[in-house]
Amino acid sequence: MNRALMLVALSLLATVAAQSPDHYDMDWVNSYRQGFNFQCPHGEVLVAIRSYFSEAEGSDRLWSFECQPTPEGLGEPSDCWWDDINRAGMEWTSTCTRNGLVAGVQSKYFESVLDREWQFYCCYYKRRCPYSCMKTSDIPEYYREEGELVVPSYGYFIRGAQTTFSGVLRDRQWKYILCRMTDFDCEFRNL
Image (cartoon, rainbow, N blue to C red; front, side, top):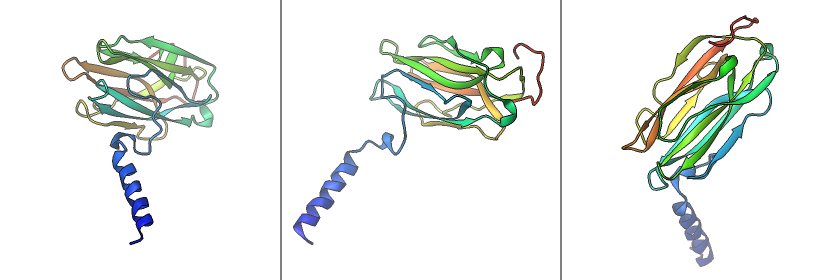
């Protein structure tokens, strides 16, 4: 084998071997122990969430989000806002107020508790109301595993989440609240 070709091959192998397996081909919105603010483009909502845990990096996670336009019949959002915030190290349940849908997430890491605080960016679509709501199973299924949610069916939307924090394992599990939205205006203020 040509010596120059062998050096190139060894260099490529060294580069691949040096790459961390947790950064494979993902568009993470944060680095470990860094805050982030992610918002979908106007008229889109979150449809997929992925995270990767690293104990060595402060028991923190990398996060990735995907958005999708809402169905045409839902119309344009008439108002968007940052909803309730949780405190690091605490359990948290949050559903967008005013029947809103989750269109973004922001988070800040706290070294003192090896955890993050969370806040959802919610958008209101006319006077549509949620129905057929459900909670997902725990994501990740076990603490410290990779977590992934992909909204299982077109027409379901993320409205919020319930999350528990393990002070021993320094990680969170999430149950996302998914709902359908009515095709007509309704009178309810919040469900």
